[in-house]
Image 1 (cartoon, rainbow, N blue to C red):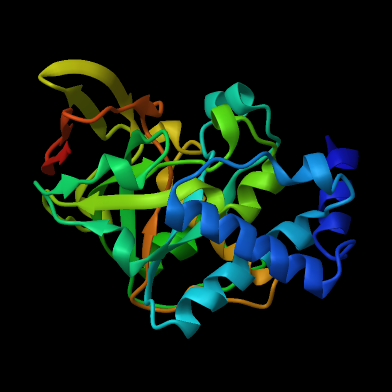
Image 2: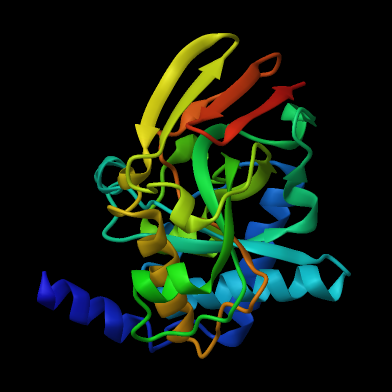
Length: 276
């Protein structure tokens, strides 16, 4: 395990792709997201791609969005349950950014035709009141820097054909980010037990998934700490006032046009939406 981690750390620091390739792949991934079409995983064509290349592609797509006037409204962690990592065959979690047009109002409509093969996950989101910068950020730092938590539902939509990818390819694809909904009630971190906080997900009135906060790396705040430390490797910090989705408490569940979703959070209300 230590050797695997060392190899990953080394790959975080080097590029095997040229700047031109990174820019072209950012356009490739972003166009697939904006126009909702499938692509094959990048490592099929660029097996030499490193983790640094993958994150550089993601940050280049983010830069392109911001240059067009899109606001970045938050961050998200992905693949934060051990079961999900095993299911997808990846070694550790990843992160992505949330653009302003990803946000859907509570009770609102999600246009299925703008997506490829959407799935939903129930999550807990943190909003910070102080900056966090790795390395060395831990759960205590996160809890101290948290303004409040709030329920969230993430709609994920990998652009990769048949939802098949490896970790480097999914990082380049902004960790499958596409839409999110917030709602319910906000709470202070000392008002809830984040490890045992339960959620129940329903589609068309049927329970399809349940879970508790501990599914997210043992404690949702551990996900925020990992994000701060991963961003710290790039010299980036999580600013005060950042909205962060910590990863799926439930399994990712496929949704289809016509579905009504409702997710109930223990003591924190519920979130609903329609796929139209």
